[in-house]
Length: 173
Image (tube, rainbow, N blue to C red):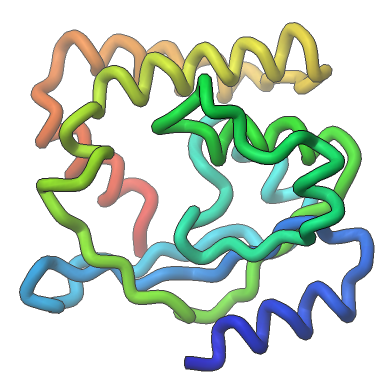
């Protein structure tokens, strides 16, 4: 219940931050805890992971309207990954933050768009990352490159359900 207030106060206190997210508790459809996902809190650390995986839980983000409009908001051509595309663009100029508290309960549903269009979403994610490198000036580390190669190979070598479980296990505490 206090998530929106905490995020609003965070943005008020940190005027250079354009987007703030929170840690999340992932539950199943019976509302049973599956994982806790913690995100980096400092802008530099958040930007370091962007070429590997989403630095925010999208349902938990709050952003400034002015900066959202400045960067043209979400690109409808990037549906399924419109959030990641936007974060890369706005990250070229502004800072990010995450509040280190579990302020959102996220229900993992097999009926979600993520599960129905997983391969399409991951391929679009690779396209967005390449754009970030080639046109927005993001610099991948060797670790980013190796991670993305393995992720790309897993698209063709692993069933979607296994990839989702593996991803959530690696990303969660």
